[in-house]
Length: 144
Ligand code: DQA
Image (cartoon, rainbow, N blue to C red; front, side, top):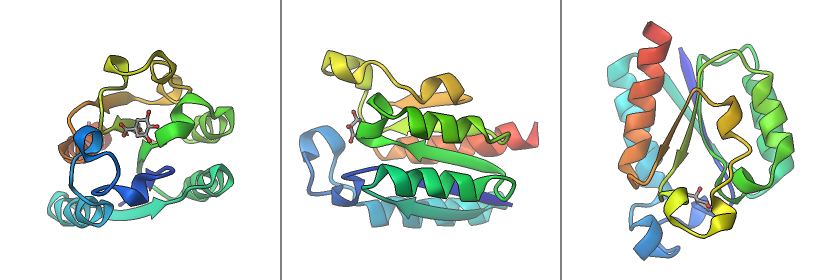
């Protein structure tokens, strides 16, 4: 069982990027933890990060029919990308949208997500630990 974890733009800078908002955990730390947790939950966790909208759309298309669940932090594309939303709409597997910060507590332009309408659930505001919560949630949905 494969779970695809997709990270959007600037998340490769985690650890150094606005640590007061996003914390000091790096993306490599997050990916390592998810792979370890995946193994203990019986899933093969694959991870992908891109700063490019088209590459993220391509990765979602590759997930079609291949993966059992998707966890996605579209980062800034959350608030702008109809293309990412449309790509996610094609999938029939569970989708969890995640944000490190609570986007609803921040600037108004972050309050709207194009992705939420096609996600099964949203996790926001719990920092890096939210990824663990997302993986546990996606596995529970799959096993239901
Ligand atoms: C983010 C929130 C977005 O508004 C922002 O553009 C990001 C990260 C988060 O994880 O909190 O890049 O998705």
